[in-house]
Amino acid sequence: MEKKIIILPGDGIGKEVTTEGKKVLEKIAGLFNHQFEFDSATIGHDAIEATGNPLPDETLTKLKNCDAILFGAVGHPKYDNDPTLKVRPEQGLLKMRKELGLYANLRPIKLFDELLEASSIKPEILKGSDILFFRELTGDVYFGEKGRKDEGKTAYDLMIYQKYEIERIAHKAFQAARTRKKKVTSVDKANVLESSRLWREVVNEVSKHYPDITLEHQFIDAAAMKLIQNPKSFDVVLTGNLFGDILTDEASQIAGSMGMLASASVGDKVGLYEPIHGSAHDITGKGIANPLASILSAALLLDISFGLKEESDAVIKAVEATLKAGYRTADIADSKTAKDKILNTQQMGTQILNELKKVASYQTSVASNGNQ
Ligand code: IPM
Ligand code: MN
Image 1: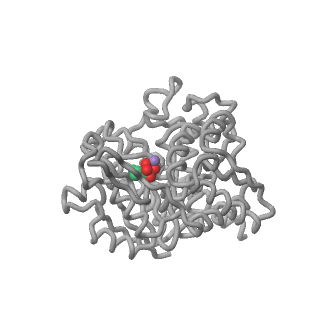
Image 2 (image 1 turned 90 degrees about the horizontal axis):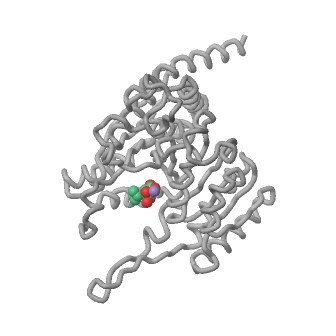
Image 3 (image 1 turned 180 degrees about the vertical axis):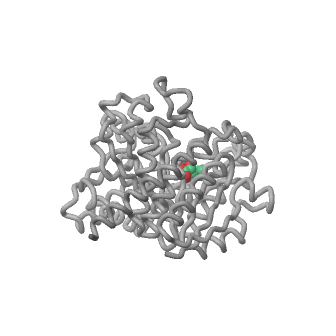
């Protein structure tokens, strides 16, 4: 298969982790005989420094003309410490989502058994958790009208949804539920917000097309509580942009660490794959960031954008085998982790490449035996 992939490292640890994600894609191409052509582009703080624009036209053109994107993160403490700055790294990310029509953000929360102890939640509550979030990504308060009035003393961000925006992501969530435990939990704040009442109405309508799927509604406050009280009660969670942003950070604790969570943003055309963690400037440059979220994002890319299920499974199996062998980055290590098993970013990447070779040769031999 011939494909063109853009690597979009962004800021902070984004660069460190996508380097490892890219190596995994290169390895897969070699092992499974694919031709992946790579190019890179700038976004975020880096792009502002170079061009004054967090999403330069040159980047956007490249993104519109490729088959998939592996993205790192954007952000810089400079902007967090000074809310008056008008041009901000995050604007690059939001514009990219909008311009590429990436309206559905899939965030799978899957706990690797080996990491049961890495979370601060009790193992018996966590074991067996497997949730797929559908976070709407191009609407809501993120994109509604915003501004200041009263000489700057009043600020507003409009929470707004249009029917078609809710419909299209709801369909995606129900379709995914068909391949899973056949349950959708839609999360809103319909007891207070008009946009949530429209959300609920539309989700109810869409659900009529899926009589085989159980639909339940929860308010965001209750859902936030139930998520850590009983994560196993969730299968597919469907929610808006802001609620989804908050709930998925919370849900990362079900998977042990933010450093483990991958995501896929899909919509009209090209797919974008990224860790759910941010640029983490507190650890940038130390080489200790966990690259597994980027590597698992690469696995999602292979599966969702290219339909390469076997290749994607090989990456996931390599991650499993590495964890099983006891290797950890600092964020997922616990008191039982041996000192020599705590790896830095690059070492963890290399470990995955080694496992990949083994997994791929096993898969190939199983396939050829099956053919005899
Ligand atoms: C995420 C991030 C972004 C968001 C920020 C960086 C704008 O937190 O992808 O979850 O809020 O969507
Ligand atoms: Mn977030």
